[in-house]
Image (cartoon, rainbow, N blue to C red):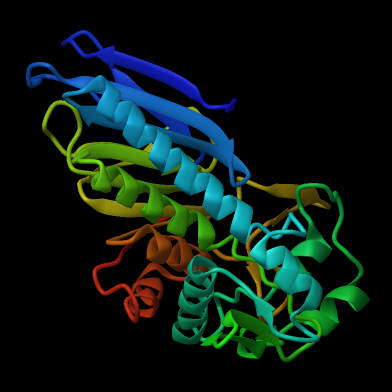
Length: 331
């Protein structure tokens, strides 16, 4: 038994298809629909948020089979890459990789390697090794900052430089060369999961779909009316308000903001987007940054790295690895 939710229907002119998960609202008002078109929708909790998938197809059974495969892909990414399970690749690495190499799956090794490339390209603004910082702040459960004496030793450590991942005769192995390293793939694994789910849909003949997992989204093909998918970015201030609408087709979109996970203390907001240089939440003039690019794994990492930066500087930085990236900030 699964916890997913299904919704399948044939669209008419009077129907409005809307998805609202995390940072995005996705909508399409069908005006000129093809005949015999089925829209199948599925949602479930995964990776600390809600995955919401919609497939446009001519065959309902094929659409449901494709959704099954995509949902299974998302679950597998969560099981192997979450830091919250001691049996996951990341959980096992965090427990033992500072002592010896830990075997991990090829998929996890690939995501870590991509994360390290992003760390190098952003000069450490994106650092997958700052799990110790994330655990110390734990903004989902704490209501006041940790003591400065605990924060200071974790600042500016460049933890990513102490993560080694490589294929060996024993398989893919990860090892830490610094005892305070803890992997946290929260800024990239969700984007990877979206990419894998989209590939599962493509493998099953789906040409038009939306995969929306919280702040990470891929728009495959077109909306039911044949036009690009319309993706609304929620206002950082009011959840019911759309601050900006994008038209997206065969492209990934990821958003990072200070309004998703945070606590307020003495008039200041402390959110979940940590600055590796200071080991405290990032500050800046923006509340939200959105990145559009070809792959969601890149959009995810780029949005995390560029939060708090000037828009032009962010574009210049992220285009080291995502040349087609577009960056949008919201105040």
